[in-house]
Every structure is written in C-alpha cells, then in structure tokens.
Image: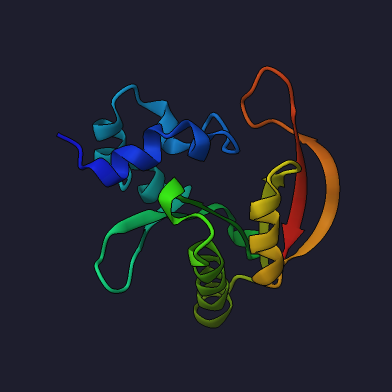
Length: 157
C-alpha cells in the first residue's frame, strides 16, 4: 500500500496539470510502482535524480525536486520541483530551487542550470524569479507529451 502523501502528489490533478506527460511517475499505472522505481533506471543512467522535499519539523513529504537532462560535456542540468497542493504558497518550492542551485554551483562542475514553466503557471515563474533565475525565452513551443506542443518559458540561473 502506498502512503497517502506520495499518492497525493502523484495522483492530484491540480499538481499534475502543469507537468509534462512523460514525468517518471506518469509512466506507471500504479503509483506505488512509480514510487518504488524512482531510484531505478533513471538514476542509474544519470537521466534524473528525484529528491524528496520534506518539512523540517515533521519530515512529512511536501513534494519532489528533480535534477534532469544532465549534459556532462556542457556542464549543464535542468531542475524542476512539484509540491503537494496543501503546501503551495508556503515558500517550499523557492527554498528547494535555491538549495538545488546552491548545491549545483557549490559542489559540482555544473555551469548552466535551466528550468521550464508553462506560460500559464505564474506561481512557478514567481518561484524561479525569487530563486534568481532569469527568463531567457517566452512562449516557446516544446514537446511535453501532450497532443499539441506546450507553450513554455525558458529560464536560466
């Protein structure tokens, strides 16, 4: 049986509406299987590293943070985050984004950090702005796995 917090994150339509259809957890019909496999092939192949965002005081799972799209030769990686709906607006995504940037620039050879947001996801854009990302492109078509291309903003830090 899957714990309620991870299930809430993976199955909540409000959380998932601004996420690509090809997210790791969407590749499984069973949320429990997705959670069990998070550190399988994607991690081993260095395609993605998915981290828990937990509350400091209780350890409760608030969301996920992710490093993905690693390009070793370019010293480039993309970052993303998603929170359980009950934790929206509490500054957790901004804190997670800042921690990811601090870690990447302070402890790795990464030189370029990017992110993408759907243009209508103003909350996520605000998170990136507060984490010192700069919007480098606006309204770009990108394949997020939907029938039509998604219109996204591109960010760099």
